[in-house]
Every structure is written in structure tokens, then in C-alpha cells.
Length: 98
Image 1 (cartoon, rainbow, N blue to C red):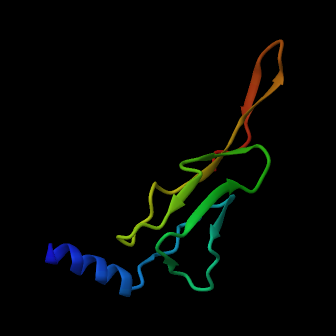
Image 2: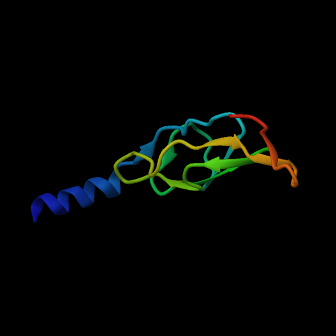
């Protein structure tokens, strides 16, 4: 019981931070609450999306800074989507890999 109470008190008095998220090309991270420094406070939630048309996000759309100082999920990246040029012949090509 004492251990549990001590952990709660430690949690309340220490600022818990997560490191900056690694951002791949074409990925935009929007985090709330917004912060000025590169360490994100516990509870910060970040939404990811691709910044160019024709790309789709691979990975979680949202990540959260946990009380253990780590982010949920894994790194996200954007890949080009297959585009059908001619429906009769089903000719496709990939815009870009990353």
C-alpha cells in the first residue's frame, strides 16, 4: 500500500515527458496541447496525416504520451497510392514509395 501511495505522489509532483516524435518526410504531426520545447508532457496527443495528395498514412493516426515517458504506437510514414490510368487494361503505377 505504501508503495502504491508513493508512486501516486511521485506521479503528481514529477513532470513526465516523452521525447520528440520522429517525423518522416510527408508526415505532419499536430499535437495538443501545443508545446514550445522538444519534450512533450504526459497526456499529449498527436494526430498524424500525409501532407501531399496521393499518399496514405501507414501506422497509427494518433499517438499519446504515456505516464512512463513513452509514446503509444509506432512511427508513421506516408506511401504513394496505386493509381489506375486505364480502366480497360488496368494499367497501374506507383507514384512513390516514400
